[in-house]
Amino acid sequence: MTDHRLKQMAKIIVEYSTKMRPGDWVVMMVDPYAIDLAHEIAVQATLAGANVSWIARDSTFLEILYKYGSDEQIKWINPMLDLVIHKADVYIQLIAPSNTRILSGVDPSKQRMLAVAQNDLLGDYLQRMSSNELRVNITQAPCPALAQEADMSQADFENFVYAATFADQDDPIACWQKIEVEQERLVKWLEGKKEIKIQSPNAELTLSVEGRPFKNSSATINLPSGEIYTSPVEDSANGWVEFTFPAIYQNREVAGVRLEFEKGKVIKASADKNEEFLLQMLDADAGARYLGELGIGTNFGIQRFTKSILFDEKIGGTFHLALGRGFPDLGAKSFSSIHWDMISDMRASGSMWADGELFYQDGHFVV
Image 1: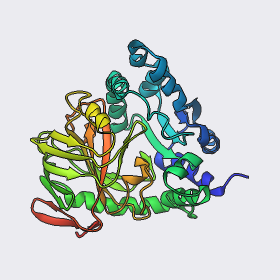
Image 2 (image 1 turned 45 degrees about the vertical axis):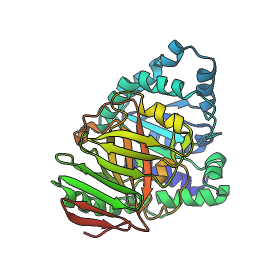
Image 3 (image 1 turned 180 degrees about the vertical axis):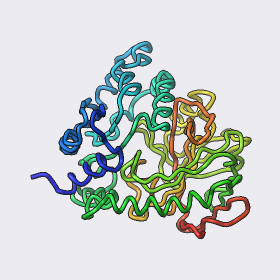
């Protein structure tokens, strides 16, 4: 018997996150353990009049490509993916892998090669997403591998996921609408601000957001959500930051990351674990050493680190910076093959100022 909360997740995605309409072409990218959620979405999407397609995704195929493929094969652009990015109305990623560390033994230079090859496709994806031509939702279905990563039992992880997404509530859409209203108040307060200063035991950083509005993220593109974010002016970041949580990208865990910025560019980088991978990604292209995003997590229903960026960047009381490509609709001019979010905790101590006015203290907004 299907868990009622799974049906509620599907309801959020179909009715609120992507607002499916009759005639929409909906494409789902489905990981092995997300099939039950995919079925529920398909039922509700079909009832809404949408046309549903699905693509099975398994990281083992990517491991095979890296292990046996030539450079030309790694750089090859899948025409199915190209078609989806340019023609679909709705694109949904359902993350529930069988092994979260399957790419840990891959040569980082090959991962960089693939990222660079898909750079133009990533740009088109973000452009269509930003203009709402392509309505995107990325979420996770509870599965054993993600539960293990989060150091939880399967049952506890299910409860965690459904609580974080409000799928355990009678009216989850009303819950997200309430968060949307609250975050809009914060976005409006930050409107027109020019400089953000971050100060904590783990950061001394200033950056410009002049002409770069903050965006309200409330379970549209990501489920769960709960953040406000912007794309900083590319040449403005000065100072340093240490990320208190491991930074996970392309199935690699990079721990103890420390970055130093000068005129927007990372001039020094180090990590306690997988430093070589960090440096490879920073050298992916000219834009990889610049910031594409500053985000502030607002979801206080997420209080623990799970090694999943989808949840972790939303943790209430944290901020995150993304290296690489920014968001076109927020004025970003940074073009890169990567977008890598890294998180730092401010709940114990830390402050943010906007144009000299304190607006964030010890993990909470004070405006």
